[in-house]
View 1 (cartoon, rainbow, N blue to C red):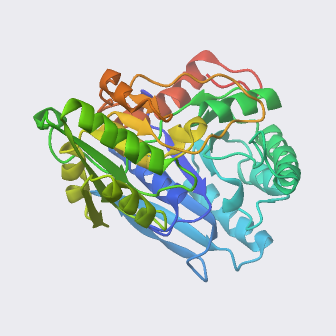
View 2 (view 1 turned 180 degrees about the horizontal axis):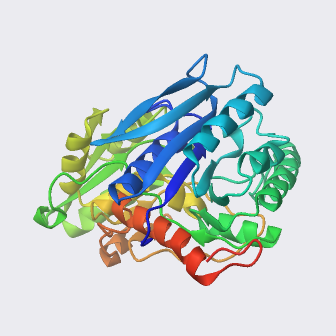
Length: 385
C-alpha cells in the first residue's frame, strides 16, 4: 500500500448503479481506495443514463464517492471540455482509465479517444485497467469480427502510446499476452467479488452425502449441459451420493434448458431467481461446488466466478470449447475443473476457493501497491511493475 495519501480520478463510460458492470466495479474499487485512506472520485465520459451533466455522490457501502457524469448526448468536444475543468479542479496525482472499447463508442470504435485523454491527463500519471481488449480473438472467429478487432487493436495501441501509462492492469492471461504481443507489459489484477461474505466462511457446513451444485449469474450458450447432467447422475448411481442444483441470480434464457436436463436425470433443481446479497452469500456458503459457463480462457473476468471463489467454493467450468487464435496452454488453478464429458468425478481433487484472493480489500491493496511501486522503482516506457 502507498505510504502517502494519493489522489485519484477513475474514468469509465457509465455510472448507472446495477446497469453497467465496469461502472459498478469502478465504484467498488474507488470506495475501497477511500477506505484505505486515499482520495478518489469517478468521471463517466459516455453515460447512457443521464441527459445532462450531473455532479453528485454515489454510495459504496458506508462511503460516499464524488462523481461527475457526462451524458453521451453531449458532443464529444463539450464532454471533454467539462471533464478537463473538473479534473483540473480536483488536481489528482493519477488518472485511472477503466477501459472497455464499447464503453466509449457504441460500435466499439472510439477514434480520437487517445488524443482527447492525452490532453485531459497532461502532467499527470496514467493507469489503465483493461477489462476487455479487442474482439476477434477466437481461432475460428468470423471475418467481420476479425476485421473489426484489427481496427480496435490499432486504436488501443494508439491509446496506450499517447497516454504512456505508468501502470497497466488486466484480468486475464490471454489479455496480458495480447497486450505483450502489442508491445506493452501489464500485470494481472483479480476481479473482486461483488457479493460480500456475510458470515465467516469457516462456519460453513456441508452435507457429505449430498453434492450441492450452484449456478450464480448468467448462463452462456453452447455449454455441454446435457452430458454434464448425465455424468452427475451416473456418478451418484455409482457412489450412492445425492446431488442437487440451485440456480440463483439472473441466469438468462438458458436457465430452462438446464432445469429440464437435470430434472430429466432425477436431480432436483431449485430456482431462486434474484436475491439480496445476504441471501446469495448464505446460499453460496451452504453449497459444495460452483458451476461457471464462461469459456475457460476468460474465466478470470467472470464476476460470478469471483463470488464463488471468495465464498470458498471450488468451480467446475462447464462451457463451450473456445480457444484463442494465438493459442497457448493455460493450466487450470487448483480450485477449477475444466469439464469434459466423463471427468465429473475429478471434482473430488479440487481445492476450495480462496476467501481472500477475490476480496475487494485485497484487490484495493494490490492496486495501490502497484501505483506506489512505480514511484519507488522508476519505470521505462510502457512497462508495468
